[in-house]
Amino acid sequence: MNTQNNPQTNFEALINSLSAQGYVICENFLPEQTILALRDEAHKRHANLEMRAAKIGLLNQSQQSNIRGDQITWLDEQSENSAIQAYFEQMHALRTLLNQYLFMNLQALETHFAIYPIGGAYQKHLDQFSHGSDAKARQLSSILYLNNDWQANDGGELRLYLNESEYLDILPTAGKLVLFLSAKFWHEVRPAKRERASLTGWFRTRGQLLP
Image: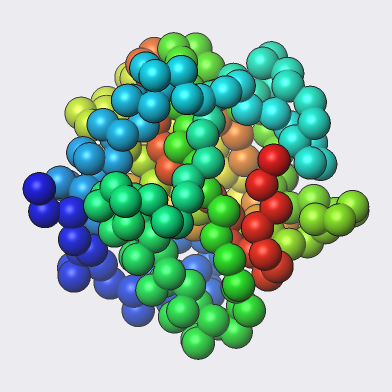
């Protein structure tokens, strides 16, 4: 299976949009075969009970399904899975360019598979912590969606709040990458009528702090 990086990804346009808006939506971030392989790996881990209920708050100490309803498993950069390797290679290439052109000083990427069950959601929140040992470490949030044949009536949108009165609803369609500044954009995951899978992560200015 070909799980190489996508040479068609327009990094220049991506970086320009991120610089201008603080967020960017990139279609076809990785080749279709890689997205399919990542989705299969996520569902395999879920079926093998390798995922756990996600927690919230500083140091991820509280599990409240009424606030956050997904199950997750963290990814290891040393994984031998070729699709996971391709994902990290593409993300590291992006990180290098972000540091070069936007001077973001991003030093690490922490990322996990996330699966929301039918009806699962994540209430409005901000990704960057303002206090504690991990304060302000998360700089740029990233979500890569793995859902094929997703339709508007399936729900499950990422609702990105642009300001107090405006928001953008983003469908979680396969191959779509969403990046946004972790300290600026409040966001939520809307309930879905189908199981919803993604790779969710954060570029950081300090080393990884995994639970």
